[in-house]
Image (cartoon, rainbow, N blue to C red; front, side):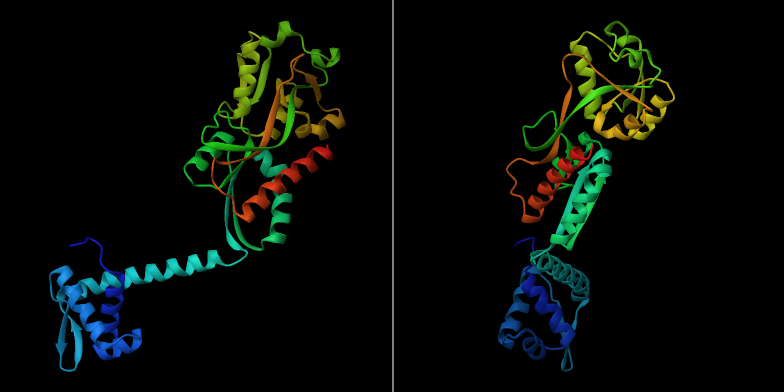
Amino acid sequence: MSDVIDSRQLLAFVTVLEQGGFTAAARELGLTQSAVTHSMHALERDLGCRLLDRLGKRITATQAGEALQQHAVQILATMRQARTELTHLGQWGSGRLRVAATATVCQYVIPAVIREFRESFPNWTIQIEPVDTPDGIAALRERRVDICVGLEPESQGDLSFRKHASDELSFIVHPLHPWAEKGAADPAQMATQNYILYGKRSLTAGIVTRYFAAKGITLRSMIELANTQAILELVSLGLGVGILANWVIQEPLNRGVLQAIPLGRRKLRRSWGCTILKGRRLSLAEETFCGLCKASWEQVFENR
């Protein structure tokens, strides 16, 4: 005996009770009375108990039948809901897109992408989850999002990264900082500076740490923040040295509030783009979204 109850038998069972008889149920279901009767006998044999009684001319449920009816009504309602949702998803131009994106991407890239995406897919629901790239990759691997827009992930065994742009990190200092006056950083002073950096769990923090470790430098004094604007505020007050990309801080650089200093002869570059699970075939809407992200990155860098 199977643990799973035949859904067609459940539908016939509920219909018999709703219609009060086999003949009316058969008419409702578009079946013969014999087929409905046979289906009910098969269901009772499968479950090992009587489900239906005849009260005069009307068919009623036994105690076991009443218990089954409660479950059957819920099961059939869930199945109808599933069909409705699948039908909706199967309609042209309808669907759901779940995206994880870094705070920087949400601020500079995503708004233009959503505006353009809506024009082509007005009936799609877009869910944006602001996270650091490592958390976005974790959500991607757990199938909680469809696309992660951010920095290139460090480990890509099960991932596929589509590069859209790259940038270069620099020291960001107050105009009165000694490095600003020289226009260059003093290697002998790098380990002694008070650094104001993005949080340790971010990919940028890992990239920066490895970069200086290769130079034999350990950044000992650090203030960690999860917001670029907060980093800029502290640096503009002369409380430390930031390490950021010039394009993110172009406005304060243009106003002379901050100054960018190269990290050294060896550049420290990052790659930005969309990450998806390797081997997964993207829908037209997802492909469009990734393409719009690339175009938005190009526009961001063109304007900075």
